[in-house]
Length: 424
Image (cartoon, rainbow, N blue to C red; front, side, top):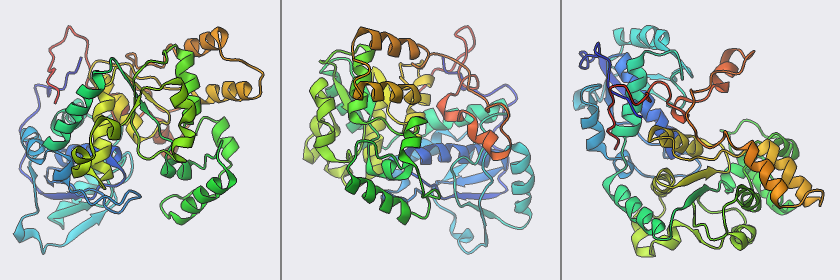
């Protein structure tokens, strides 16, 4: 059960020493995690947090402001006992010299209370130039970890118009019965980023390589697609997702919500999935053009609708462990460990290849093997995983399970304890 109440030693926000500005980066869920970390960092360094700016320059080129995506007033009011949050930098501070700083990734209390807080001696405004993964996952005070959860799961609600549309879409999806939200990450950006080309034509593979080469943010350019796939680093194809769901025993009349943007290759790559599961639904099928028009051309807002439908689904299954998959998994854990299936892609790829080669056939034997392998990959309660043994430096932090993927034990407690079960 959620337990996010502060400890008895927690105090009201101390006197502010200055202002913290934050430029978020990435898509919706990368920005969400970054915003919540900035709340915690503001508390650590005694800062007044200015409502963060959303990323308008990333791959998605979305012009949405904070208040277009999130409920700004609720965010400010919900954190009143933790951090002072204001909508804009005061006019008298507009001309002040800002300390433009890239906070070190996965940093802890010593870094922020030392190096960053010492900057108040020379500056009244600190600008966090990036917000992703700037705070350590572990070894932080209990009250900081609980604050991250209050920020993420209670304060950072979506804007009223997004919440209303999300609820409407959930209700419409439920009218078909209990449903699976399939985060089918078979989209142009992730295929280009990962270099995954299995099942694509040479022309499509070439197009994806050109996209990767043209993106300066993506540092790795030369990728072996077969090696990527064999290591489990590629998103499942729509066909592979269909075989996997069938092997798990989901019948063909199961309603499936496709939580995704435009599928690469269009309908031709969806045929295998649709032939097995004809009840495929999407935002565009559940709502009219007029209902979706306010969110059109705003990928962040459309992603927020997918997020709501995914969190509220009876089963959530991501085909790639990206930012949305991790964020939704963590939120569903927080809400009571709702079933979230994490495909063992490395093992599945070997099975898919044997099916394709005619070495194995679909049926009970294959199904039993897939079910057995995934018994412990369905979101059951467990503590957050630490670093992989033997890793050092940044690789050590990178190998840890992210805080927002699994907020246990910090924000989830046994039912016998004093609980705060308020969830926005």
